[in-house]
Amino acid sequence: MTFNQYNVTTITEPYTASNEEYIISDGSTVTLPEPSENAIVAVVSRDGTRVPVEPNATELVEFDSAARVGTTGATYFVSDGTNWYLESGRENVFGDIPDSAIFHWKISEGSGSTLTEELNSQDGTINGPTWEEGNWYEDYALIGDGTDDYVDTTQWQSFGSNLSNNWAIFFTLETTDDSGTWLMGTANDGGPADTTTFFVGLRDWFDLSPDTVGLALRDEDDNRIRVESDTTHTDGGTYRICINKTGDTAGDIQFWTNGSEDSTSIDADDTVSNTENFDKNVVFFARRNHSGDVMDYMDGLLDNIIICDDSVSSSDISSDYDSQPWS
View (cartoon, rainbow, N blue to C red):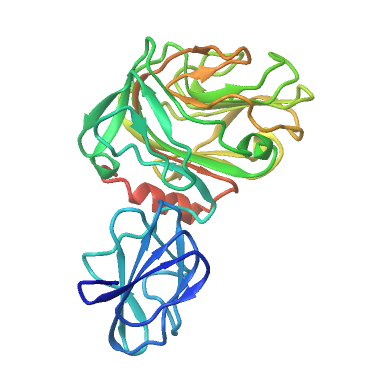
């Protein structure tokens, strides 16, 4: 099959491309051919799974490691005879997504009740939040009304059991709601004590403040972490938040706001080490408690949510912030 001047090839295992080939990959690695002047290769993801692309050359310009093809249209690679380049004006690569990203809700649909997850098919159902068009990541964001709006996602596969390891979360927040709400979270059956719990919010809970983003974790042995940023996030400003877990205790939880690391306040500092897979769906704009009830709804905006299964570097955080169109 041909498409324009390209030979179209669908792959389900690692593959070395040829000049003027259009590769449709299920996530299998594509290796570019030996460089030759004016050679061109197009690569597209078949189902939204990231596609690693390896240069068969001295370097792939603009990347320190393998490129990862995006999900809308093809990414085009061209050669000058020595190196491979991304063709100007047509690149569509996850250059701003950390390598450890496992879930990515761009929040870019602009209509409908499905919130697409780009990397591992963890799509969400929108129950009330409305679409906001503007200077957001890929033009759209979602706004909850603080009454009963939420997005029901999935159980996030094994992320619950990974809570005791390193991980990171990115999201964009804009709100003036300081009434004590949650932005996302779930809790397993058996609580409130001795059960895996994951809440991110603006919550006056124990000694946490309703004005700043905080994190509450609990494991199956009732060990708890409660920690929050010292930066105010409820003044109506637009904030790109990263929560970066780099170790076992509350002191290893970093909060970053708009590319800069925040000081933090710690309310509980156990070693959380025995967490299990979530047994309920995670929700956005609220939290789901151990009984399965959705509660503590947030009045405000969320956009471009990324979940990573490892901690991230300061350069990852800076790159992510710089990729936001409003930054």
